[in-house]
Length: 115
Length: 109
Image (cartoon, rainbow over all chains, first blue to last red; front, side, top):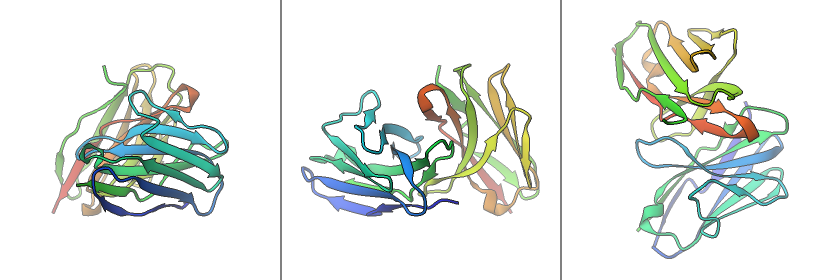
C-alpha cells in the first residue's frame, strides 16, 4: 500500500513554543491531506482538510490561527501548533489521499507533549 | 445522536472464536464505508472497504445494511494478532470522513 511518513514521531516542548509536524506521501501524489488529533481512549477527530495549493478547511471548534496548515506540494503538508499549551498534548495523525481515490493512508503519527 | 456509533467493548474472546462488531451511522446519504484497524499507540490501517453486496477477505467479512444504516465486521477463527481496536469509518457528502470511537478486541489464548 501507499506510504505516508510523519516527522517528528515524538515532540516534547515547553509551553508557549511552536511545533511543526511534517506529513509526506512517499510514493504517490496526495491531492488531499487530512490532519487528525486523537486523545487517549478517544476516536480520531478531524481537525482540517487541505487540498494542494489551497487554504485548509478547518472543522468546527479548531482554531485556524493556532493550528497552521500548509499544503504547498503534492507530497508535503505541514501542521504548526503555535504557542502550544499542555492541553494541546495529543497524538496528531495525518492522512493522505490521491486524486479521485477514496482510501486514506495514514502517517505513523506524532506524539506531542507540552510541559 | 452521534454520526457514527460503535460499542467500545472490550470484546474478550478466546482464540479460534468468531466475533462480530456492528457500527451504526446516522446520515442516510453516507456514500462509502470502511473498517480500519488501530493497534495501541499506532496509526489506523485500512482493513477493508465495505461494499453493498458484502465482501470477504480471508477470515474477515464486512456487510452493509443501508435500510437499517449499519455496517458489520465478522472475524472468524480469531488469532491473537487480531487484538486491536477496530474503527468504523463513514464517508459522506463533500468527502467528509467520520470515524467511530472504535471497538476494542482482545483475543485470549
